[in-house]
Length: 340
View 1 (spheres, rainbow, N blue to C red):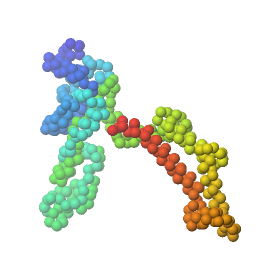
View 2 (spheres, rainbow, N blue to C red):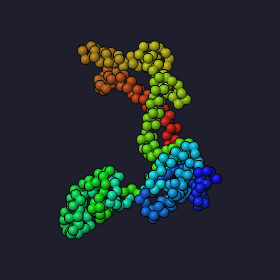
View 3 (cartoon, helix red, strand yellow):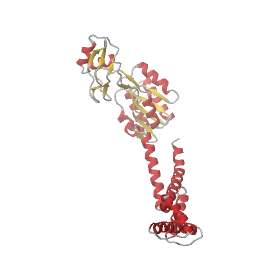
View 4 (cartoon, rainbow, N blue to C red):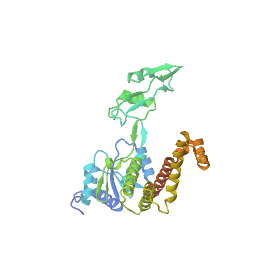
């Protein structure tokens, strides 16, 4: 028996031993705040956590004794003990545990003296109350109530208690009558020990969607950097090669380098430019041969053909961008699979 608990009664030593045993059998040891949770709610929470996590309620002093005997980083949990703390054991990671505990919270009526967790807002609209003293009671706490159509009605939406303010008795009674339950009741994770580290709520309360979007954005930016800087990787090598081929083809056309893969493109561009010049000449009175006249007439009938070359280039650029997008999306597929 460790020296820390030798002086304790047997039942307390048994409690300490039980805490140590549970800690050794689970990946995560956490502290949760039980303050203000009704017994019925505690039982419901235990049922919701069955098979995933175990909640053990005991004295804070015994928790301190157990953690002192276990030593290492787990002893740092003692600094997070406060109020009506209880232990929670699970094999889930701390992030899943935090999310699970948040999901077990339910809304309950406010009690006098409690602090508003968020702005408490009374919406406008009719109530189920008939005319009577209720109108004055609501007005006394700043709720704009009036009688309309034989019923009590809230004339406008109003914030009656701001976040962080204390809820007084009259306000609490009014909110109960209006069936407004502003208090989140459930286990509040104070801290969790996992793999030699202590995790606190500020580290565990992450926006999963935003986190995912940030990772995706970082991956896309890394992909683009790799392609534009020509840094080959297994994911980007095909896109880099495709981009180099397109740029080489464009350079060959612009510089009129007669190579078998681009000769047709050069001739096609020259033909389009010739038609443009012929059209301009015919408009100035120059007589064209029959073949050129027909081609020029076709250009005249469809003015958009004059811009065929730049339009073709734009179309080709769009195709290139679409190919790059497809390659990039292919590179992102593996990343997306990680997030389901």
